[in-house]
Length: 309
Image (tube, rainbow, N blue to C red):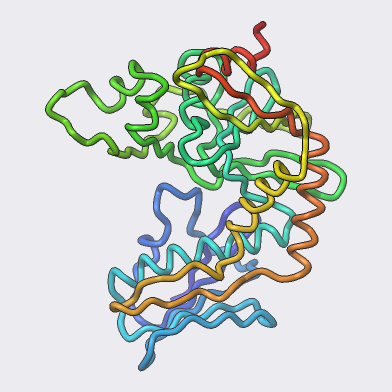
């Protein structure tokens, strides 16, 4: 059984001599496709063996997952490992997945970065539903860098994953629209994954071009003090925050999968060359596109982002 799993120009050939449902590792949440193109740069081999283990053959760009049998644990593990393998291939091609929400407005691509719960998802949704922006990505914006210029090329994930508790802090009306107003519902930390189409948002993907202006903001919504604050200073701490986010997407030294009750650690896919390229990308990207930290209420932050003042 040979299949190619792809995202744009990145293609991984999956090889399995036993019965394996390839469709189960191409979930709708990821922007992956199954095709039969012969061009590929990585191999993912799944084989039956006496013991379960993960082996990364860097010289031949081949990852082998040995398992005793094919079951739900294996499918879940394959999804995790496949995504990391693709992310390595993307970085080799100069494409970087930023854990940033993004929207497109007036030929500007706004990347909203921040820690979990900072409000980047709520802000991006507010910009699209209450303002005039087009939705692009929720936490998986892909930026290409050729050594001379950066370009936003799309999103690695198609869905919008939103937590009820996070959204309720900043926009109760929007939260009620999405999760309902049933007082008997105690699912405070309930999550939903919705498509932009389900939320009647404009598609930002069709607005991407070679001349988009890219602006990166770090977002921190404040539900108590709505006064807007912006700090445009670029320092070491800020650059390291972005770099660590990039490194976490690739270096899998702390990632493990659970197969048949056994925790298997995935070997690191990182190397010195990729490290140097990431540093070069971050230095250029932050110098050219970083616009500072925005703190305040969701309306105030949105107005500043859209330059409506």
